[in-house]
Structures are given as structure tokens and as C-alpha cells.
Amino acid sequence: MTHLAALPGSTRTGDGPADLGAVREVSRAVSAAHLFTYLVPETAEEAAGLGVTERGPAYLAFRSAAMGAVPWQVTLAAFYNFSPRAVRAMAGVWEAAPPERWQAARFRAADRAMRRVDVRLTDDHLAEARSLIDPVVAGADYAGKVLAAANASVALPSDPLVALWQRITVAREWRGDAHLVVLADNGIGPCDCLVLHTAAGGLPTALARATRLWDDEEWSAATARLAARGWLDSHGVLTDDGRAARERVEAETDEHCAALWAPIGTAGARRFASLIAPIADAFTAAGTFRAVQGQPGSAGSDHR
Image (cartoon, rainbow, N blue to C red):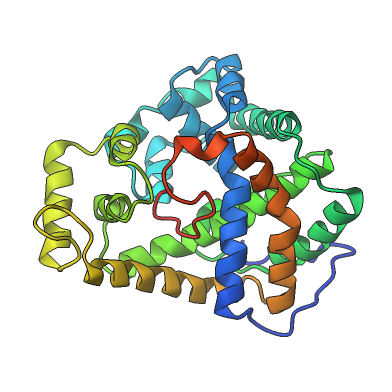
């Protein structure tokens, strides 16, 4: 799938790629509005209802359900920074419940969580947000964007707020897919990008190790490779060169994403960011993001 058909009633307000400042701004907003689904109790409850109580396999099933009942090796390829042993643990989730039931459960979890924290978007703001994100989703180039394309193909739920959240998910996964291309192009492998991400404070090391399951030897080897590039010092601390390299990767990802937001341009991207801000604001007020270190609105996707 290269392009989705144009959506009826969508509004195209852009006159070319959004400037990179607006791309970074809307990417942060999209990431922040999407993040809660991996942290809220409603997600674990819905997974348990499908017969899966382990957090890792449930996360992988929810995240990859849009792709269908793919083997775990396909999820590994799409997720990039998880070790094979971590993703292999999801074997059997499609026997517990088919992907469409996982997708429906994901929508229920998002709906319940957003209602619980009282996300407030007026009907007018919901309609305006959809008028901006719909042409973005419809006009996106999905070549090489596996998770974004899969999510774009999912039928939208009837609830307007959850439907908007699913559109946000497409944009979030599109950046993530683009980010993986940039990581690979810069020779930053799956474990290396995770070590770099934790060194930069984007994710607690203990959480990264517990969820991605790289062993001590693999983690040490990745640390040594980054140190050899001058990105970490002898103690595994991020250097100025490492910080600059990480920013270059984010900037290159922004450049990829400029075309994504072209249908609505700089002004439209910034307006969309402001319209969806109440989602993250509500979860921040509820204390949801205390479980992770760093800003919930990080534009980076090397923690996929």
C-alpha cells in the first residue's frame, strides 16, 4: 500500500512540507497523546480478559495486532530494538485471541482510560482535529512504513475520541517507521540505539533491560561500540559527541517527516498539536507518566 484513498470531506490546508520546528512540535504532541496506552491499568485489564497476563507478550500483541496474525519474527523486525528472546515470548498470543479481538480490546482500553482521566475535547475540536489529521493519513507515503500502514488500514471505531486516537497512532507509527530507517542508515543497531536512548535519559536502564531483554554480554558489546564512536565515555555516560549524534538522528527523522505533514503545512501541524494537547495533559495530571523517565512528549522513536 503506497497511498490511501482520499478521505471524503477532508481539508487540505498545506502548501508544502511543514518546517522542521513544526514537525518536531507536532511529533512531540503525537507521541505524548499516544503514550498512555502502554502505561494505564486498563490496557493490562483488557489483555487479561483475553487470557494474557504477562506484560511483555500483551504489549507486543496490542502493538502488532494491526498487522494481523504475523509470526513473532515479523514483529521483531518491525519493533527493531527488542531482543529476539523478548519478542519470541509473544508466541501463542494469536491462539489466545485473534488480532481483531486484540485491536478491539486496545480501543476499549484507550476509551476507558481517556474517560477515566476526563480527556476534554469539544465536539468542534474533535471535528477540527480530524479535518487536519485525516488528509495527513490519506496522503502519506506508506512505502517501508509497516506499522503505520497496518494502523492506517484498521477500521475506525465509532467513538469520535477513540477514532482520533487511532489516527494519532498512525502518525506516531509513521515517525517510528521512519526513525528506524535513520537508525539503520547511521549504523545504530537494535541494542545500540537502546543503550544510547537510556544514556540520554529517555528511558530508565532497568526498565529497558527488563522489557527488551538484551543480556549482559549484548548490552556490554553495544556500550563498547558506542564508546568506540566517542558517543559514550568509559563509564557509559553520554558525551557531547553522543548528544550531538542523537540530535542528528532526530533531525534526520524530522526531515523524513516533513513530507508527512505537507497536506496541512506548518500552520496546520502546529494547530493539530495544540488541539490534541489535552489528551497528554489529562494523563499528566493523573500521574500516568511518572512511570517513565524523561518527557512523555519525546519526539524520538528509538524506544519503540
